[in-house]
Image (cartoon, rainbow, N blue to C red; front, side, top):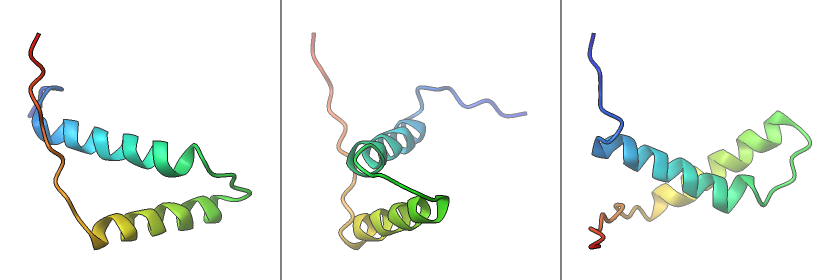
Length: 62
């Protein structure tokens, strides 16, 4: 069994991508079917992948 800490950087990147998807697509849309939702998510991913940029990590100093 392999346990990955919740603070590992790749999990944070995945969580950030889904937060971006939620904020920019899902919250703003009205979907009358699952097929419409899936099509909108697929179009978001295609546009996002057309011009990929890595997430930039910054260190917050307190």
